[in-house]
Image 1 (cartoon, rainbow, N blue to C red):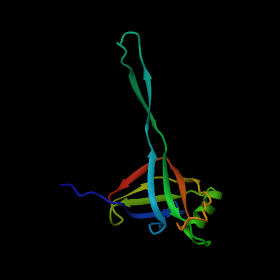
Image 2 (image 1 turned 90 degrees about the horizontal axis):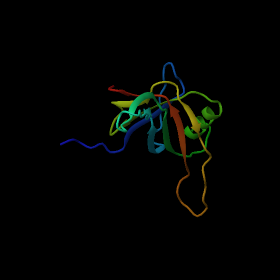
Image 3 (image 1 turned 60 degrees about the vertical axis):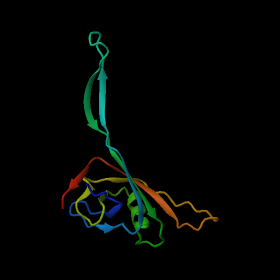
Length: 146
């Protein structure tokens, strides 16, 4: 019987693209959502093909990666560092593993950009810690065995 995977084992970012210097986000992150990456297709239906279309394959759409991040104050905290990278349009890499440990892992293959690092919303009636959902856009995500 297969062993199910539960949660994220490790989550890192790097602002150094050529030789990544990974900074742990695992203690600050609550959710990771990867969407997009769909294959673009086109259709053509001729008069003689009984209504069945020809399907053509194109390029892949970019991925969007959303991370729910704990907001903490301080200039060296992940939120402040990532917000500054967003405002400066600094490329970023993201790496994560499912389950326990840090390998095998997935990572953005090339430079990725943060497309949204919002300010946190606060509610005086809530005792929940402040959190934000940051979003990155990546061209390709690759799998690494180690």
